[in-house]
Length: 357
Image 1 (tube, rainbow, N blue to C red):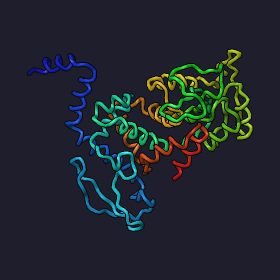
Image 2 (image 1 turned 90 degrees about the vertical axis):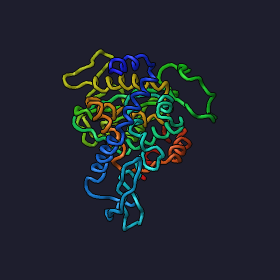
Image 3 (image 1 turned 30 degrees about the horizontal axis):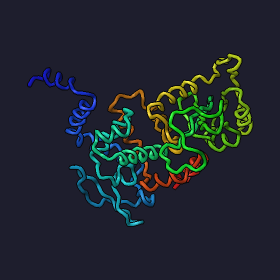
Image 4 (image 1 turned 120 degrees about the vertical axis):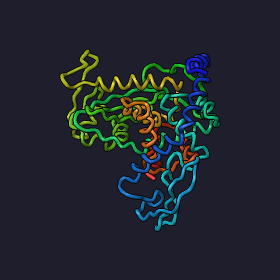
């Protein structure tokens, strides 16, 4: 059969059929690609020498090899804690039953496919696709320690509070997804997300509170991310002025209400543009549960960093970034996260505890 005939048959398939054909083609050379990416993970994880992922000691020694998905992996033994490990221990991929499907899973996440579509294409359960996603996003948050410098600009944006997935809502009546808020303007029905960005492109984004942000909320969420900032551009909200006074930062006010959007080199155009891209990207999920909102903020932030790379480089960066720093996250951690984060204050507190362990 000629390639023209094959191509004609391929174009006659629906979208799901075309994806299955592409998945089969990719799987035929998955072992080669997976080996390459795992090698990059090893180099990144052990850049300063072998370190035990369990006790963080450097007394690791090689302890034979074993076969996984048709490829041999190096095993290590720690002489301090006596535990065994490999190049992927305490990563999202470790301890899973389908190591051969992870590369495609990362690729589908880059494409922004829904969990149901990913589960269908990979032949895994929907809950498996869900837990894989949040293991990856938690690993990304472990890497996220943004420190802004120089001239920074910041502003808040708001998302509707969502109890998506919660079957035991007691503090209010359940609502239909997509309904408008019952109160006009900013209220405690909305989650405040504070976003800041410096002129080198580094971005800080995190949920701050429910409703209007106060100086206490901003100081709690920003913490040490503004230690190297000299000038901070914002709108005329008083919370930003008080925050700058407390941090001893020169405050540049851009009065948007008076149609003053740019004052020389001082403006908040970059952060407002970031808000717009974030909102459009979030729209594909048809509502993100408030308790998981920080995970999605980290996901979008990483996609913004790698958006100028080609597809293969993006895939390698995504895989390497998620697995380069040991952080064990189990299904029980994700379940406990959902149980303990009844509101956005608990989300921030519990997330800091989870990442500190």
